[in-house]
Image 1 (spheres, rainbow, N blue to C red):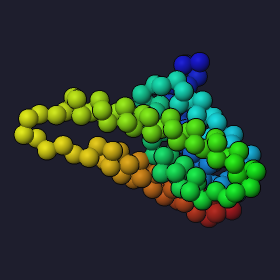
Image 2 (image 1 turned 180 degrees about the horizontal axis):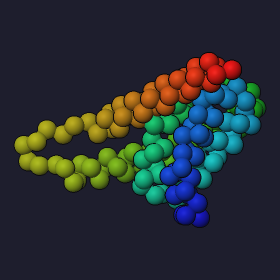
Image 3 (image 1 turned 180 degrees about the vertical axis):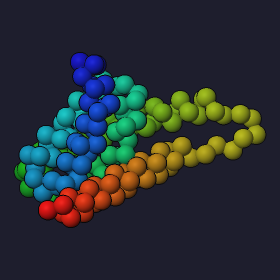
Length: 142
């Protein structure tokens, strides 16, 4: 339901699922579960949820590029491609919308797609840095 999607987005579920994708790349079952869950969340087409999912796009694309050719990899590939398609469609929709809202005569247009990807990469980098800090802190505690 929409209320559940908003709750997952609000309380950090998207970040946890994205981190699970990154941490468990070698486990096809974990990747499929996380990718399908993220795809299910994205299917609601709620702007704020999709915006929070955009930092996962470079990670998903990198995982697609690194997959092998065996049968398990093909199942993982389908799940990741479905998620990638939903995120890319949001980026394209957002690009067209931004171009219409912000274009003025004489104003050079910025490459919105590149800006979205850069923002997503920056956010993904911040997430990974926070995870590293947490791991170091947790390691010191033990």
